Length: 124
Image 1 (cartoon, rainbow, N blue to C red):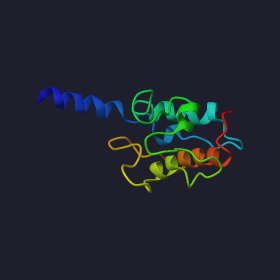
Image 2: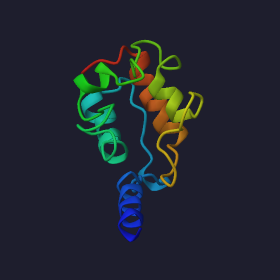
Image 3: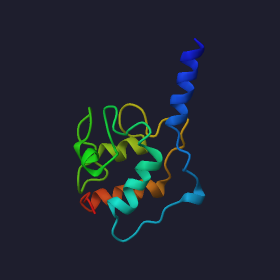
């Protein structure tokens, strides 16, 4: 029982977003860059659970665009139609991302990813 509890605690902490406070708020540039703007967000908040293991990997552009068990994660030019944005906003079925106890993403971070998708979700 203690081993299961310890494993659960480690899992929860590994999926926690430790870089999600107002001091770390991002600015939305005119042209959003996957490499400079989007991947760093995924690296700090998502890849602990959505790295190279599991059903969905956000560890690279190719993996992000490949999607996961639920299908396409990103639909270029359709931010609001993309599963990624729906999960971040809590409007898709299933669990909101990131899951508790991690903090929800700010509207600005979600707007940044939405803008990148609306700009064609390019690997730039």
